[in-house]
Image 1 (cartoon, rainbow, N blue to C red):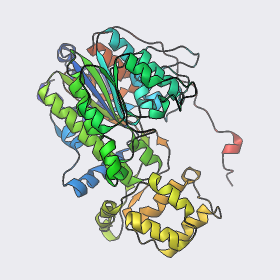
Image 2 (image 1 turned 30 degrees about the vertical axis):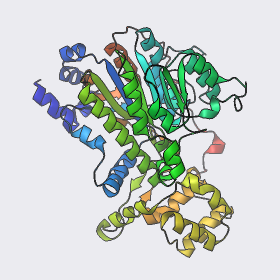
Image 3 (image 1 turned 180 degrees about the vertical axis):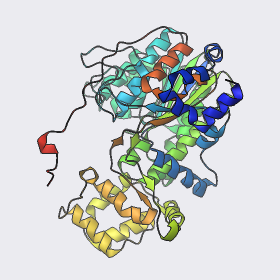
Length: 491
């Protein structure tokens, strides 16, 4: 197959379909000589946590409204040098994955049960990717807008029976001397907040790390030592809240700046891998908060541009950008005759100045229609109709319940209420089983095409690093079936 024809098939998306049903064609479409000869010295693995297709679409429209340009993601997708794929991200025990099982599939090449990091059901630990690359003298970095110990970054490094063991994960980062750690989660390192009272920042300093808590410290950090930067006690703030606060804007670095600084440090090494996560997109989608999700995806897009700029300078860099699962599957809905009201409704997103998370405490205090209406008008610009406000308060007072149990939360109900104002509806507030998009550009990118299993990513990274290793795997667990009490009776 000629390179022009192969490129056409990759760009049109037809090759992805063909790969699923006709594996022989997929193998023929990939040039083995190119795939084996191209070995990157630098790998940047970018993850938008919890990005459904609808989130990506809405964020692109939002980007055009807010900064008069679309997402860099789509510029990358249009490039003839970009390879695209869809990836099945299922976990060992469900077609719907959580972030720990998803990241573990990339980080170990084995599927694990939801909630677990790089560990099989029988308790066997799997060798994480970062440990294998460390032995091959690759430097490694993790950058995220979540707590640095959160599931997605931890999946490349740690072994835990529970993703919630954040204090243990923090200690594992030290024991496995990851060169760059930038994100939130200071409480899991602080001896005053750790259960074991261990002075982990002191231990990191003793091991030669520069320890940072403020954006200015990151900007001035020397490039020689390893880095530990925790810029919030928990997760970093949503972009919409950070932009509204001069204090947060000064003290908390944006994802693009953390990424730029991490690349400046890691570029001194002969070979490195960097994982960059826009983790709070997932949290916003769980909250049915399209503005928080879109603004954080725009912030991720700015970090992606930093990585592509680096790749233009350092041509032996492989950039892979993807998501780990969908969350809540938002949709920008058609509204009005011939759907002509949709653009005007979605333009209201520019008026929203607070995330649902930031609003929650005040919302819980609003006990009257007048109080609720004032609060939402100040935060979003929405003049809530009295009947809609009364319906919301009836749910808050537990006088009514949603028909769908998956929407029985304050943020989900707020998302439903604001759907009338922003034009964005939601299917729920949980993860979804979507096959996720993946884009790759750079040496070795031809491996990442067609229809992939999540575990393929680990194997491709090892092959590109010339590491011959495979973790043990176990068969998929039988899908659990709901008990009789969990199924509504059918008349």
